[in-house]
Image (cartoon, rainbow, N blue to C red; front, top):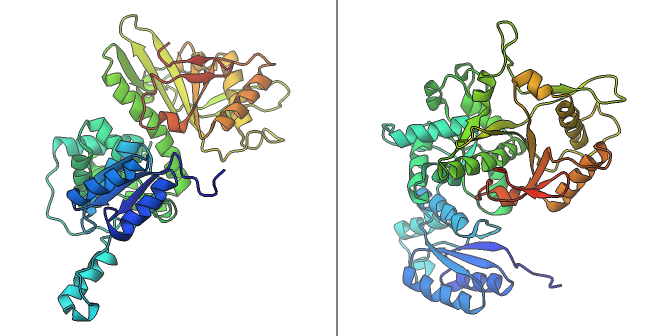
Amino acid sequence: MKLFDLKGKVAIVTGGNGGIGLGMATGLAEAGADIVLAARNPEKAAIACATLRNIGRDAEFVPFDILSETSCVSMVAKAHERFGRIDILVNNAGASLGGAPESYSIADFKTVIDTSRHRRPRFRRSAPPPLRLTADDLTILCHVGEHRFLRSTHLARLLARSPEKIVRRLAALYHNGYLDRPVAQLDYFARAGSAPLVYALGNKAVSHFEVIDGVDPSNADWTDKNRDAGRPYIEHALLIADLMVGIECAVRAQPSIKLVSGAELLAKAPRFGSFGPVSWTMKATVPGESTEIAVAPDKVFALQFGDTGRRNYFFVEADRATMPIERRSLAQSSVKKKLLAYHHGHLAKRHTALWGIPGFRVLTITKSAERVASMIEVVKEITGGKGSNVFLFAEAEAIAGGNPLEIEWLTGKRTRVRLVE
């Protein structure tokens, strides 16, 4: 095996159409990486791309101005849209006016420094002119409010707008205080190159909402909440968003299928006295255990099929592969504890008693095939070796940017099914 093998990786090289940048791009391509050349000169970039393709790698030119925040964010969105991933960033772009440095005027020197060092920060607001909200702006705020955190690429899909247009509008909403860019992203940008920016609702937007994330938004400082949100919490929300955005976009293309939200299902659940259920928490009794165990899904939804009125109900679990698969005691959190709660709750028909739904399946999105295999082994164990079709598994990479209705999910019996079956 090569000591430096980059096959399957994607690298952005800013200023990669000539000089040191092209040298870096060539070296990365020779190691197996596909290349995004982010630069200003399309003629030079065309020649550079041809050179890289002759090496046998894919290469794409994306117009790019390092002094424009909109251009920077748009370049990343285009690169991600084109290749589906970004693994490496070579931040090579800078400025040189030619000639001996001692011949530069103060203005010339400032131009070089501003370009090479004082790049516009992505997490500090400017003072823009007042913004009049458009219908698209309100739609953007609604989507972000629903999901808590969304990437720019999610919003481009949901609004069916070009990445460039969405990026420009998101920047305007950010600088006007309607959206926040959670600073936990800085950890990712510092260690792993670049990615589409993540957005959350800013304080200026909350007056448009009665409820956000299950609470009255007027009782919280949302910019503070976004600032305090850690990277694990954001990544968890984005795993769920990958699935739900994919399903919403897929359903739009199939008029015979309707997406029914968890809130709508809960509102129509059976009522006990003057009250209905207030959450999706389900408790279950496990044989041999003295106390009940509880589980609350990350998301609940149904797919309703117009030709028959049939509904498929789904509980969603987003797994970042940080929770232990199994622990000695069910008093501690583990994947096995969750699966046991769902399994015995399903056997006892707790879902019917609590919410009036005839059945459900648990969709688990996780990080790797190895993690899926470990979970299926637990399903096999808790079902006495039979396995269970109640549990469906998929890898996060297959969900992101794809169509969750078309992919094949692996069941707890190791068969493959689609959500519309």
